[in-house]
Length: 240
Image (cartoon, rainbow, N blue to C red; front, side):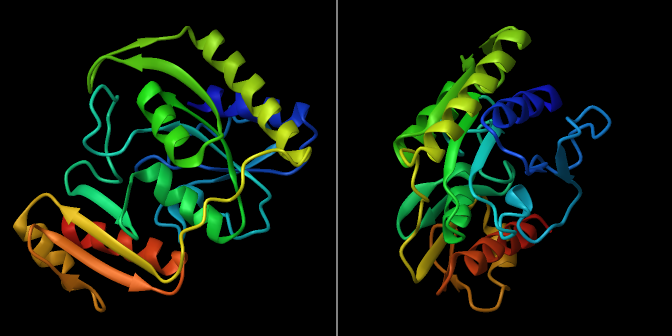
């Protein structure tokens, strides 16, 4: 994982980027090896952080790259497909649009005017990103054959492709031809479908939420950051 992030950093530097912020996004955000991370980047690590997988997105960021993302919950032939928490979250909608972590984080980036230029993951994650954020540079580092099986590229090949795609994405963006920010129309209605009635019972304790049938909880807000944090609160309560 650290080597793939480094590959994206190398591509960004080749495209002339001078300020790089990395946010460790998986699980407790303690996966990347800081001693092996390219020293031209700073690292957000540890949890909880206000914006989790895209911590720092509110600090004047120009563009974002997603490395090592997964397809949303329920996707077939997708390695470890999930939406935030595989044990609690069944589905997530923003204004009726079904999204996973790719769409959720891209929408938060979009609130701050930040486009997502590139994604790396398996073919299912790349296809999901292309459908939602087209056009977007993508690198499928593996072809999933199930939830726990995949045909993987050699690491050197994956890293070379990530580096090339990152450089090309940033060069295109700087030329004014790249991706626009992904923005959800406000106010934003969040709907979360949980995996068990006890989880919905717990999540419904969140002030401002509405409990629906079929294990769904909804929440509405004038802005995406509040919706993002509401989603995280629902997930935490459901897992309690």
